[in-house]
Figure 1 (cartoon, one colour):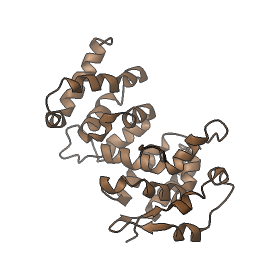
Figure 2 (figure 1 turned 90 degrees about the horizontal axis):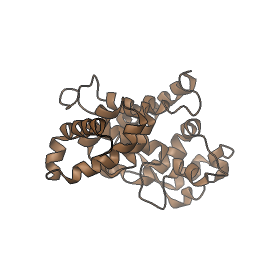
Figure 3 (figure 1 turned 135 degrees about the vertical axis):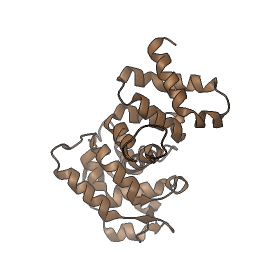
Figure 4 (figure 1 turned 180 degrees about the horizontal axis):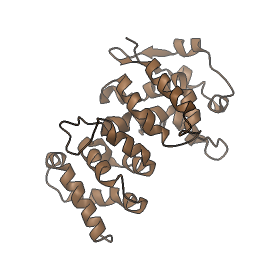
Length: 247
């Protein structure tokens, strides 16, 4: 078993613009000294790196191609065996993005360090001054896969395998961002229903969806009822939006 590790502040302070550009390597010894194991966790780094290597040579995924998220997210989630409480420790994602899979982060994201320096650092370290766990490039993949993977035998929607919705949402990057940027994303039943109902819709409808959903939820019975009836709620939402876009 290989345990996950968390990155300590001494190592985080080493992440600079040269490292982000790939112009400077940080010694493995430094990362080892300034990181700590997460007891009870299990991760197959080799399986994840093998999938990343496949992406690097696949002509369907040139540099900065967003759809590679759909290819990698299921592997990230299935090979990083942790619960949500553990996943909320942002230091785990610091370690994965800077120590283990920094090659993928640079391949996936185009960095503009002159105009968008903070955004570049967030892909490796997340929003260090906020509570957004989803800006880190690796954490983002795990979290949205966590919220969209379902058991095909018990899921409220029709899927062929447990990561079908994960691939769908990452193939529609605008929908992925609208989900992660809004409060309803912590309700897995709602996220599953939203992906099922909006994965084939246009940007205009998806853009308005979170505000309209928030309004609809405010008029619903108790939270537990919404959780149990999420598909019906979201189906009603989409129907209302299409029948009367102004409301």
